[in-house]
Length: 187
Ligand SMILES: [Zn+2]
Image (cartoon, rainbow, N blue to C red; front, side, top):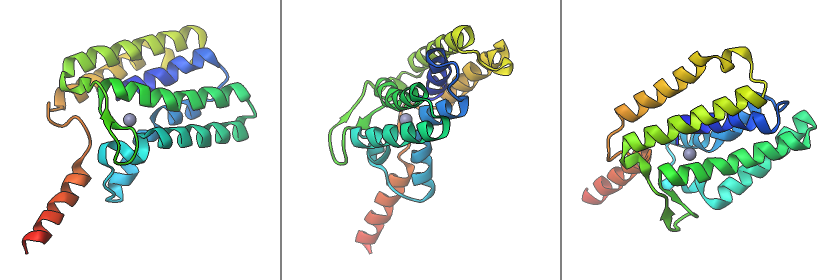
């Protein structure tokens, strides 16, 4: 899932209107930020095993929840932050494929393969989260504006339009590592 995670972060404000938005957004996308960091470092992360496995998500939820509590002194905010990390994995099971543990089975509905189904789902999650956050979550004015919603949906549209059926996951680093491995065996 892409922008749907941000929709969930906005919707989480309805549960705790005083939770800092920065923490909510960070919690909602933390596993993907870790993906990007590993890819940037050239680390192969097969099926998101190091960032989206059950253990990785539990650890991320605990660390971010504890950090949010330390910074905000609010138990409710810490719980919402932890729950958002867990929601990230559940949402990714709908749209993608994730390893349960390192070397373990890979599960998910992989809706990315039908990109317009993915778009419809993510747009609906973004809209629902935005609407709940706007109504009950005291969103800042710029985020409560219809243009913010439109921007998120447009971004998702562009992402789905640009995606190809075969690139359902971000495996580029692993693919490169595999290729180098094969070349090394050749020579
Ligand atoms: Zn993810």
